[in-house]
Length: 413
Image (cartoon, rainbow, N blue to C red; front, top):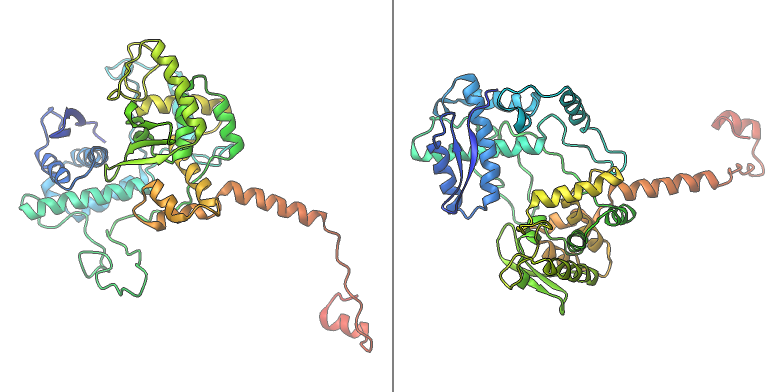
């Protein structure tokens, strides 16, 4: 595939992301699509995710030599077939993008990345792998179908959407003739949309979380993990908090929700505020900005800057290396949700409110046992089976011939 074009972050609220072609010019059809997404109140992270899907589609069109407004259902079909078969494009290190020859160790690094698709022996989670995940392919199909629907309305795109609806669909929306007395069905929408398996969220077992927490070096990192695992907030929701959002007396912290972007106060554990206070006293003595409108989380080195998600992820990965695990920061949210959902005195509707789930069905995923719990229970079952004495068959009732019963039922003694 041709490595042409790029998705650029502009820093402009009116146009946060721009898709640039091979000559560095803005791709106007994508700019129109992004403007519509902003009008639909989509978040900036959604624009970035959709932009990456469109960038991949634009590069694929450049490789096959077809303009975006001349694509047919054949190109849409073959693009999703390519995503299913081909490896994900990888970009080399920035030091070797200008023609420099990478060292021989880089080949070993690629081998390690491909091997990361296997299950981790500590967590049981598979790595990202070299192939596109079904969820990534499904999102790309939805993004491109919506992109062409927008331009079909304006008359600038092709006559037929290259990513059509499923043939079984008789209406343009799912559950068009839904009976209110019946549950909603999961109808297939896109014709070429892959099937995404519904996975149970993985939680971090308590003993492994304690080991990761013990491997942290700084009070800031301990405070972050304590807040993530007790509030269930998303990583960026907590990282975007300000110093005025903390209420230690009420054990509350305010976060801006990802979807609705509403400010919501959620409770946290008492030890999270203890670690936060230790971190603040330490960094304020070193001259970090202090004020109600200042960010809550800073880098530990000068000049002090707001802590970003990539930096927090690097911190968490360093703690992961000590354990040999591949847990992610988002698994802390799953852990918090699982702990709250397993408490019989915690209503599931309260858990839904804390996690800011739009559907109760999403929250109920945390009521099912996870892999770690099933393995522990099954091992205990086998131990109980091994410790039970063998049952001796009861003698036949009086009046029955044992030889006749042995012939009739086989092996009866």
